[in-house]
Image 1 (cartoon, rainbow, N blue to C red):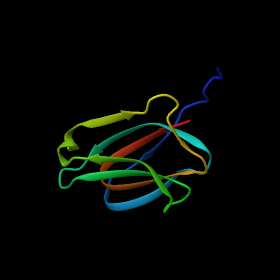
Image 2 (cartoon, helix red, strand yellow):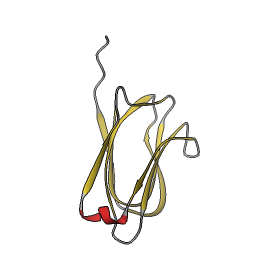
Image 3 (cartoon, one colour):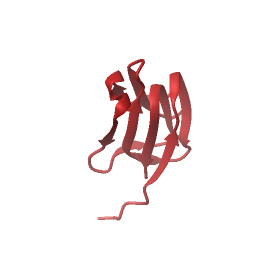
Image 4 (cartoon, helix red, strand yellow):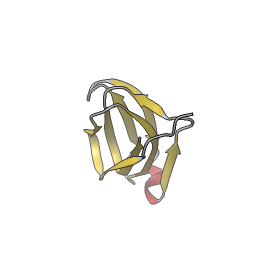
Length: 101
């Protein structure tokens, strides 16, 4: 079995309303997502393949009650493959770190 590559991370700050950003412009696998909500609204995280309006491969709803605590979603196995690039759309998020490799 081949050894997995290095795991990297990219952090995104607080957002109110939807904001879409490039995580990495390469073929990668999503390994995990660490996030915190905001007190005033329910949040959402969408991870998109093939551009900022590409296919949604992972979506996480973030309740407003999570603003005082962080949560981590670890993906099983090798993670989710993004075959061209990875974009993230954050809506009402206090902070988010994407782990990929």
